[in-house]
Every structure is written in structure tokens, then in C-alpha cells.
Amino acid sequence: GRTYEELGEACIALTKKKSYSTPCVNLRVVLIGPRGSGRRTVAKYLQYRYNLEFIDFEYLIEQTRLQKNALGQALRCLDQSTIRAKSDIKIKILE
Image (cartoon, rainbow, N blue to C red):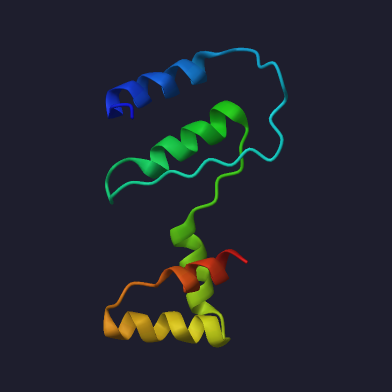
């Protein structure tokens, strides 16, 4: 595999590329990293640079938590028990 530095250099090289041989259709970029790593900053830059849609998952969780349905109730219960949302709940939020 490649090192983080090599991956970073490859990503930077892609952002500097001006033309593409094929158009991007339904391009999805998922940024993963710990809190404070700059995911939102990078996402907003990519949104601006490539005219992409930026979806803040934390915002989606907050909006779902406010809903008066089973999924909102499940998130509120998790808040009370200080347990983080499991993958199945996160997938339902995206649906």
C-alpha cells in the first residue's frame, strides 16, 4: 500500500488536473478522519473547487434527532445513554 504522504500527494495532483478524459457522473467523495482533522474544511474546499454538493452528516443526525418518529426516538435514547449511533442507524439516516 501507499503511505499517507503518497496518498496526499496523489490527491493534490488530482486537484491540480485541469481536464479529464471522461466526465464525472455521480461522483461521491467520503472524508473520514477523527474530530478536528479538518474534514469539514476539506469538504467545503472541494465543494467550492469542483462545485460538489456538501452533506454534513452531523447536521443530518441533528435533524433526524429532532424528528418525531422511531429513528428520532432511537437517537434521543442513545443521547441519554451516551452511546454513539451504530452503523445500522446511520444507514437509515442516509436513506
